[in-house]
Image 1: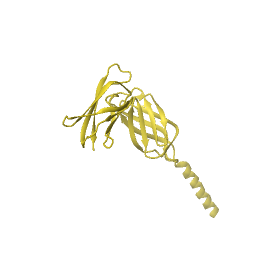
Image 2: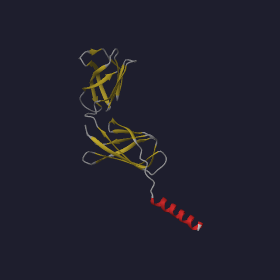
Image 3: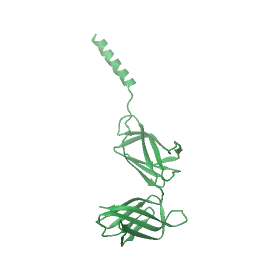
Image 4: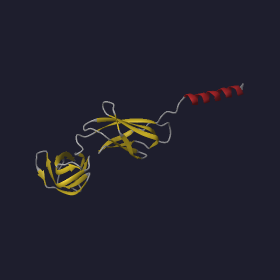
Length: 207
């Protein structure tokens, strides 16, 4: 009797292990950042693993765009998409990914939005201690006699100068900014490969 009962328990355990699949442990997305020039970075809240990973990107009409991974790390991925349009929200799906080291490989989905123009400021951050405004651009840029003007909310201008510049950003030395909202205008700038130089404007806050 005991042997028969033990055999029944073993058979039930085997049946249960076969009939209940291992659940996919999809990672949680911590942040999605469109970095410009078609590059999208997806950061996860935990470590992840990949197995035959792939990525798809679709526009609002459901059309797929050409896309490829450019980097895969244990806590984030970067992919590059061709044919993106400005001011458009896109959906991406990463397959063959799981959270941590256990569970089946599954999928994770997220969205990102492109800016109105690749020739624009992605991030503007002011360091009060150093008296420097750090600007990151979406696209790769070129300069011709660039100039900068910084104004506060009342229209007052502040003495400033470009202390460093490269193809995807610049640093502007400007001291004495009190708490409040400001605008910075950069002239003599263009996207790499464009024919005409122009100007762009961005806003930033000082705490």
